[in-house]
Length: 149
Image (cartoon, rainbow, N blue to C red):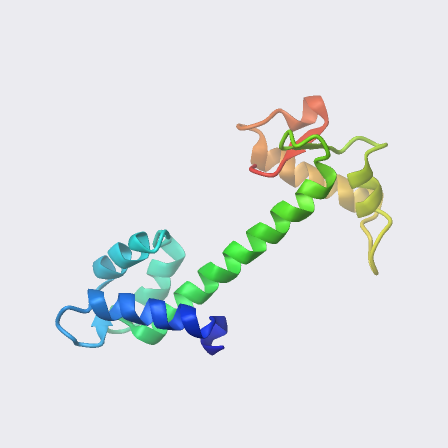
């Protein structure tokens, strides 16, 4: 597995890169990369652009593209795993889980694993969530968190 991608993914991404490389130069301009990424269902992030700007030529090679796509694929897999883990606690399928003192989620987070959260660490975790989700969901009032926030 090159770059952490399967052989099939490398083949598909290489073909897509080569299709976009109309002049057969072996490099793409950032605007071409943006188009290619959108065609693959991804957007080119500001972080990606900063990484590309660090390249003295400002162009993207196939290896650069494969590295970007490998990171994206890893992110997709991680998001799927997180959604599956969240679903374990979302017993009614509402998209929300309780974080009150009696909740299964809180109990699991503060008791299982080799280094479970202390109550203080769990509260810090929740305060970060609440700060992040404040505009989207009133987590503080209803004692629920949702996966999307």
